[in-house]
Length: 224
Ligand code: XBP
Ligand code: MG
Image (cartoon, rainbow, N blue to C red; front, side, top):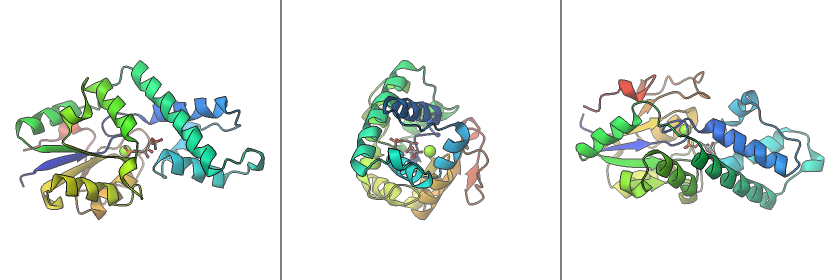
C-alpha cells in the first residue's frame, strides 16, 4: 500500500503534552480561587472527554460545587486563561517530539507524502507547539491543519478527520492516521482511516483492539 498522506493527532502523539495542559488548568483554578485540583488519577478520567472546554463542563457536572458554579461564559474565560498559561509553559519548556516523529515527518517530506494535523486542541496551541519543536511555522511542516476552531463536534466525532481529508483531496484509503487515544482512534476509524496507535502516558491502559497497528513508538514504524 502506497500512502499519499499521514495525518497526525497532536496532544499525546506529537508530544507528551497532557501534563502541561493539566498544570495550566490547575494554575488557572488557583488563580480563580476555585477549590478544584486535577490530580493524575482525576485527569485520566477527564481525558475521556476531548477538548478543554468540554472537559471543564463535564468535571463541573460531576462534582457538587454549587458555590463555585461557572456559567458557559466563565468557562470560556477560564479556558482562555488556561490556554495562555499553557502557551507560556510551552515557550519555557524544552519540548521533545515523541521518538520517531521527526524522522517520520522528514521521510514523508522526502517522498512527497502529504502531512496533516487533526486535533481537538486550538490552532494557537498547535502553532506554539510546532514553533517550539520544529522551530518553524506550522505551514512549513504540515500541508493541512484542522483544529477545534474548524469543527462543531470534537473527537470521537469523525468531523476533524473528514475536514482534513476534504482539504487534502485524498481518499481515506490512501491515508493513515496516527493517534494516542481511544477518542482519536474512534474519530479516525469513523472517517474510514487506517489508524496507528502509539499509546501515551495517559492512555497506556486503553483498549486499542480496533486499531490497525499499535506501536510502542513511531521509531518502530517503516513508512515503506
Ligand atoms: C487532546 C485534547 C485537548 C487537550 C487540551 O487533543 O483533548 O483537549 O487535552 O486542549 P488531541 P484544549 O486531539 O490533539 O489529542 O484545552 O485546548 O482543548
Ligand atoms: Mg491525542
